[in-house]
Image (cartoon, rainbow, N blue to C red; front, side, top):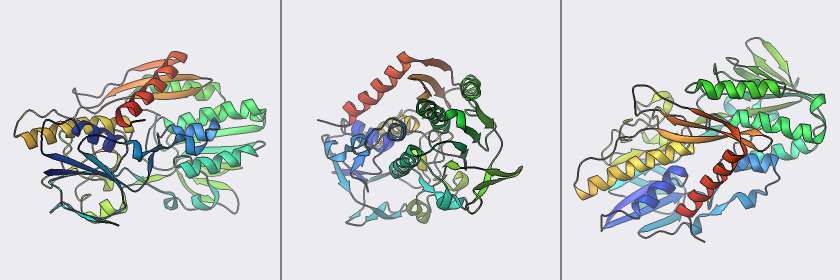
Length: 378
């Protein structure tokens, strides 16, 4: 049997393993490893935070990930040697024929001084639960929502959080006692799509949210409850930050990040191959020129699946990575917009925008259900 080892069971890992389960290569065995016992959609954290979704209800157990020729193992990856494709976990050692690194990105909350002590985030389940509990007793004041570093997962998510926060505080009757400010080091919300950026900025303005592009937060001073910016100190009663993202430490220690942009795993943007034979990287941990988002990891998985099948079957013509993905954006009040991005097919990226509607909210839910049906059973 020839073995493909997939490290990470997020969008990229799940899609890749699912596709390889139907490969024409008869002697293929796929092992997928993740340290967690369940999958959670990233957008579910907004539901935990603002819609009273119990965290347990957002979890889809990996025990339901059952496909022919695919084996899931809950293990922690502790060492990767890309030269030999040797992988050590807390339970075993693997030497696959093909290795795919899909470990995602980790959060480095300590990279912003004072953030751990005096800030909140909702990019993790525990962070969303903690902020939910804080908001339950919030009676008004100064709120700062800030993107603390670039790149970060799901570019629309910080703006979704700000708009849904406005909606919740309005519903609770404390919005008129609250000032919300949004700070980001970026010059626009979605640079590849001016129409999407304009729609987000218009919504922020309509909701009375002060928007400050090109404004990084350098640190928090917990003793004074102020955010330190280049334009001076900004007082807050509640600080919500999108933490700095970084490649997982085990990937950095492996040497896979050598030659990669800003410390991410170096890949060929056309094939997602690393410089090492038989080793690919997909999703948030790779330096492919696309945003960090599950839909782009999913598209990368399609490319890598075709490349692996071509390699194992001795055929040519594997498809080129296009960097395509559809992102649904929550605008509040039950309305969802959509941006359909294509980064690498043509001479320049294109990303047309569809205005928020109830119909697109239904489309978002249907897309999530379709993925669950494709990946999981039961």
